Figure 1 (cartoon, rainbow, N blue to C red):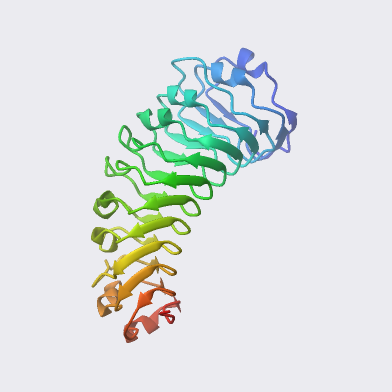
Figure 2 (cartoon, helix red, strand yellow):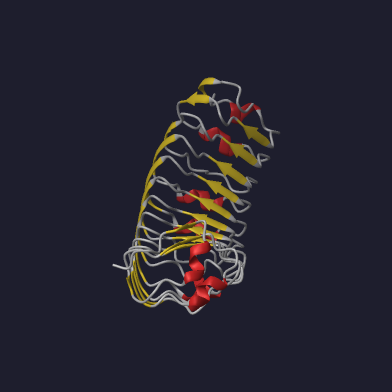
Amino acid sequence: MTQCNLMGEIPEYFGNILTNLERLDLSRNNLTGSIPRSLFSLRKLKFLYLYYNRLSGVIPSPTMQGLNLTELDFSKNNLTGSIPGELGNLKSLVTLHLYSNYLSGEIPTSLSLLPSLEYFRVFNNGLSGTLPPDLGLHSRIVAVEVSENHLSGELPQHLCASGALIGFVAFSNNSSGALPQWIGNCPSLDTIQVFNNNFSGEVPLGLWTSRNISSLVLSNNSFSGPLPSKVFWNTKRIEIANNKFSGRISIGITSAANLVYFDARNNMLSGEIPRELTHLCRTGCSSFS
């Protein structure tokens, strides 16, 4: 029932009569009102999609054990309040999407205990506090997207514990401290975007030379230290503008054959720009102030 121009509220009785339902997709409609608590009583329900509506109110707390939900997507609504800690009872949950709402408060630590969680996207809300310290320790997490919130503190130490993390996107928060060493030792990592934060210190060397990294966006922080002597050939995008990097830009950076964007403006760099960088489709490396 997606994209059917449905209007009005979701009936509370759905949870009482649709007892054999395994998939409920009401996405991309014009539904209003709150999310019925009764939906969390459907024991056979595996997929619950309510994204792209105008739903409001708080996310109801699942009160029953043994629910089989594997994908829950409430993104792109007008939901308010906090993320219920009881979502940590959904032990089969693989995908949790709550992005682009008006959620506030801290991310419950119970979510980091979900054994099947792989995709966690809560960006564009008003969440605060730190990321749960054990996030990634108990599940094979693949993607974490928490940008455009009010998160603070240092990053968790276990996001790549399973070696499956592909994307970590946490830009436009208040996170601080140094990037943890695991970021440089995560062979699966393809994308890291942490611009517009308060990070400092040197970037782990392994991050520059990671075999699979394609997008490295670190702009608008306080990172310091020298740039690497080379980066891996697969890297396509490097954005490090508005930091405190120093020293020269090594000609070894041009060893990245797929590099199409390199922006190192407003650092403390010195020396000449390697001529080989002029082949890039777009370059923002002409300023060294």
